[in-house]
Length: 175
Image (cartoon, rainbow, N blue to C red; front, top):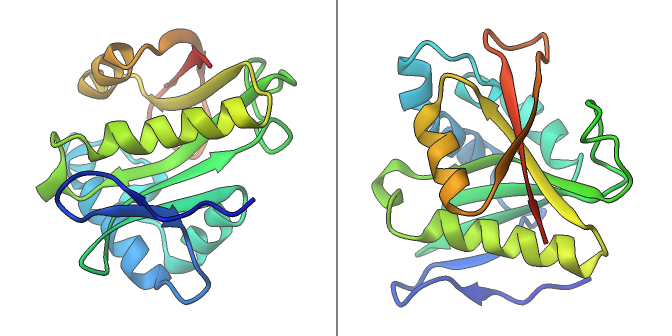
């Protein structure tokens, strides 16, 4: 499926699928910037420290979208369809799609870009016939849990992924 560049606001930001010519170095740097606050809280999200190779591997596990402002990557989200979503009882359900590696440049946080990226993922989930769109975040990241709750996501279960230093909360929303 081809998705056209979508204007995400009157500020000229577009959201589109990641292209082969997009810089994974820049994408990784965005992830590090966006997750720096969480790292400062002592949370070891993969995106706080991952290498470019890890970014590549995570992008390849789904459909990656990027937001660009004047050609610079300022946001990202990886959408995983119902077959690509797995790893917990909720994620293993055949009607659940998911998102991950979601980030918005700190300079743009709180301005609606994250909501627009989540809306795009919700629309993708609906388009493929998923009944739910799920995600996970650190239990101590109460500000993120509150934000996802405001977007209509609800707590489903806890998971310990093993590669983090926190328990994750899986949240989901009917689409």
